[in-house]
Image (cartoon, rainbow, N blue to C red; front, side, top):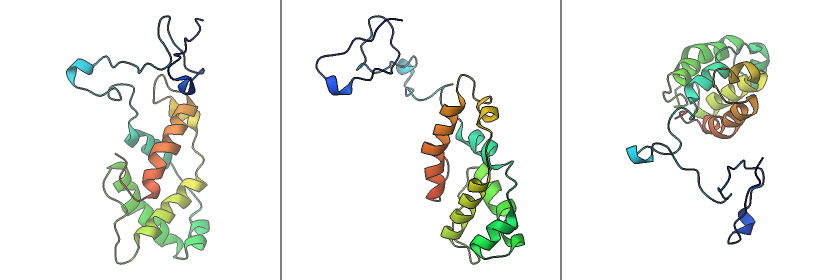
Length: 158
């Protein structure tokens, strides 16, 4: 494997873990194949479909609703109904889901979602098969670093 050549102008930015081709220095930005079409480097087949990721992580969730209800203090049926009728459909449709209502505050809805996610153990190996060319670690990182922080703030996914 060819060694990465490091630029002497920016030694603090050297990233030895980057794979490079012969003649490419580490501090060069990758070029987009679609730059002449006005598309950003992040667009295209390598971008994650976050809605698919959310549907694969939270849709099959079957948590212990009694345990969640004891944590949040409404009844088991109330938690399950809010999840089934409000949160899950709006998450999967990428609609605002954390808006306050007369029965549940935004904070309570976010807490319910976090309780469901915490009690769900996603199978990252199976989920990563829906994203060709990506490892389970890469898919898990997108969930943990991109999608989950937005959900914790009560925002839509995109």
